[in-house]
Amino acid sequence: MKTIRAALCGVALFLMSGIAFAEPIASVVAVRGKATVERGSKILDAQPKLGIEQQDTVATAVGGRVKLLFIDDSVLTLAEKSRMKVDTFIHSRSDRGKSLFNLLDGKMRAVVGKTRFEAKTPTVVAAARGTVILFDVGMLNGQQFTRITCLEGIVDVRSLTAAPGTPPVMLSPGQSIIVMSGQPLPVPTQLTPAEIEKLKQDTSTSGAEINLPDVAPYEVFIGTVSVTPPFDRQQPATQPTKVDIGVKF
Image 1 (cartoon, rainbow, N blue to C red):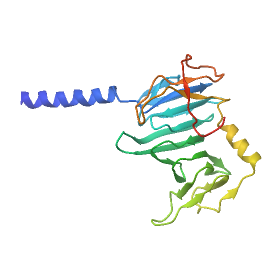
Image 2: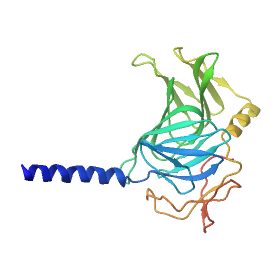
Image 3: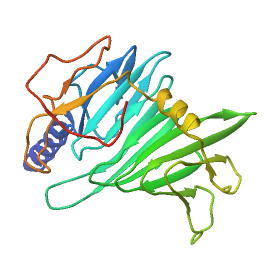
Image 4: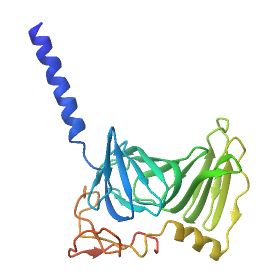
């Protein structure tokens, strides 16, 4: 009996250790205003270099914005009054993996990295590879809605209530779709340059530029990201090498 108890205690300590020292999958690289990271029962202030873990929920207050850099080179920017949960993130040297983000409310810009990318909202799931996407979740006339805009690449949009086998709606660059709760997917609309620029400004971080030192491909890189935006809080300067993340701020 003592041997069994000792073994169970060892397993429990191992599991607790795994939770306490979970590997970060992303890092906060820029913050403007107030932003927080909810991790279990803890609420952490989002500060540059703070590691982001799986199942974390990132939230911004009124006037707050935050930018996250993931180890697959994905970049997510949350606008004010937004909430996003990291549901799944699998990435390694030998497996391209998968990332699934749950945008609960607000606006998010996604620059897709190396993993198979999906983002879930209360009404749709959007899947993309090597693209730039804008998301907007909120209420309109008492109904929940999601607006998805493709800036680069191709985005497949599926309704959460669609029957199995229903084909997705494909968005090309410059196209946008608004999906209301409980309604079928409408035909995408082509936005004007002025409309696209307005949507991009909503998730802009005032000229933030992400610079990374030279690292080997797929190398886990957390904690030494250099950011040089005019934010309220920013990291100390380093000697960076500029990396084009595929979107202009």
